[in-house]
Image (cartoon, rainbow, N blue to C red; front, side, top):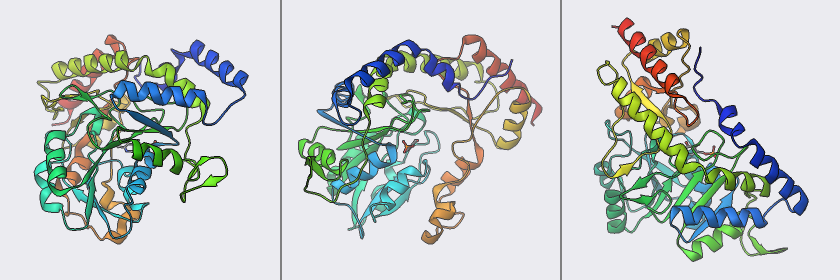
Length: 369
Ligand SMILES: *Cc1c(COP(=O)(O)O)cnc(C)c1O
């Protein structure tokens, strides 16, 4: 029996009947973009997160960049980002014309180290984007305190942490706004590309509703240089269904992470660490090993699918060659990218599969000394 890294097919087939009903409903409504389903999903998602508003958009990257644009962040401005994140966080800044300023993570949590944020602030700094990496919430109290002191905006990148909490407050409600991807592989994933922004600021929400739709709120009247970044009715209808199962799915992910944590505690792997304030939703279960590539190769031979999140740090990508951030500039991020390995975790994994991954991972580890 082999265990895939992620079985998206099984995840979505659980809802096949409900999806078909939703499709029929949208077809029969005759309305496909910016209608009832999107408004309902926005309200339900805002309610879930504990914010006043949510604005559906085309994907997670644009969720982030539209908020920065709505705040008039652009050329000449700086935005603090983690040195270890999926490149989309950096791209969202770059697309506005502003400069991403990388700050190293804590080795223990993989999340941005608040102690290193203050030294990175300059007169050009406008915002901080903490990323809740792998499903664990960043240290939001410390980050918000710094932001207040320097009058900076806080934009959560919640792509990997739908439903996660920090001191019982949900991701989405922990900063000035959040950009949240709803890409199929995320904990709350559509059946295609999708994204959403949460905020409790009414002026920001209104501006975003305009920006996502050609800068227009009244048909053929354009008040802003807008974009086309809309969430469609069908994806909204599917997401409304999946939102009902998010908490149960996240609970199952937490159970699996506890089984891994116990089953692998006496192996020579570096195991993930959950901080007290954070209620992680375990988007990924990421271990570290000095011979990561060998370990993933062994696991593949044993029938266990793994992935690397991520193999190359953003500052070492060709796309950012012009920033001239050479190898050695961000040693913690670089080491992380060399040593991390993600084991399978998803709400459809059985206990048997989890135990099998544990046994085979221990076996693979013992073979690599
Ligand atoms: C997935 C992801 C994004 C981008 O989301 P898309 O919907 O693919 O544009 C942004 N940030 C992080 C941390 C992600 O994991």
